[in-house]
Length: 111
Length: 118
Image (cartoon, rainbow over the protein chains, first blue to last red):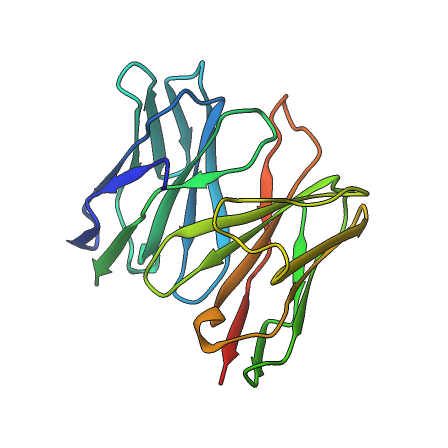
């Protein structure tokens, strides 16, 4: 079974609004990564956050990690129509080990 | 950044035939590569871990005789779907573990191969 669960499964917002997606996992991790996938395409790596980190930023993206709650969130600020995609979290329990993916959140940003 | 390619990007084959998918790390060496499968509107499911020079490690429920993996060099891993059936139709994605950056090993994903078995 998948390590991670994401919510919401689907999110629809207007351009300019913020989008928040959450990911929960079950076992201890070394790091957690967020990926984006456009329909029918491969994955684009967004951010990697290590287990000893609590927050990371990259442009309009903000990722938090709460290892006590085994959860992470991805915030996209000032969303654009081009942000429409599926977003997945993936956990690794070793630094270079396999990634286990969450179920994903489908984000639709309406222009 | 590091680039991983896959070939072919899409393939249609007849039931009962075999299909080989290649995964290459273009500008780095990867001792470890992973193969994932993704069905429509679902997440990625890990099929196997491919280690250069040794046998692949398959996840529970994945038939190793049906999905043959060969990691013969540090830049190439291949997945062969043998005796393909329509239920094998899926999006197959590989990833390669890149060199460490700031102490972390990122996984770089290929663009995926869409397999349709008729």
